[in-house]
Image 1 (tube, rainbow, N blue to C red):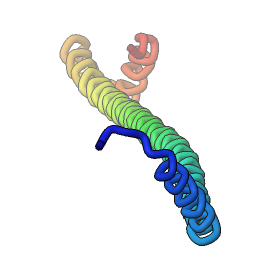
Image 2: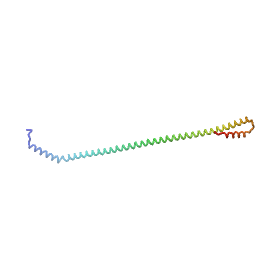
Image 3: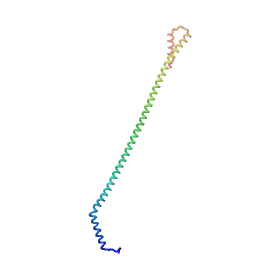
Image 4: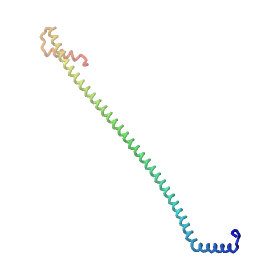
Length: 162
């Protein structure tokens, strides 16, 4: 019968199973445990290495952010310095233009003053000559020229200069 229980066979199977366990314990158990321990250590090392790499990557990211912030700050500083310099140069150009304009106006005023003085001197001479001629005709007198000029110059000096 196929389905019947044979107690002798069960005992032999238990004996063989126990012997097989003892043989495996003696021969294969240590290498299996060693392999499992080695695998466990390898996994722990891999996890530790991954954590270290993660920390290193986070440090690099933080350092890169700091470098970027420094670079941005530096570029803003350069931009601000350039703006300040351009403003300063613009102010210097305006100041120089104002100074040049002031000098030009001052020079023009001096030229106008000189021309006015020259024109006034010419006008005085003309007026004195005309006055002398008019006085000669009116008086028909023989005053000498020096006396005539003195009279006219006295008259002109009494006239306001402007």
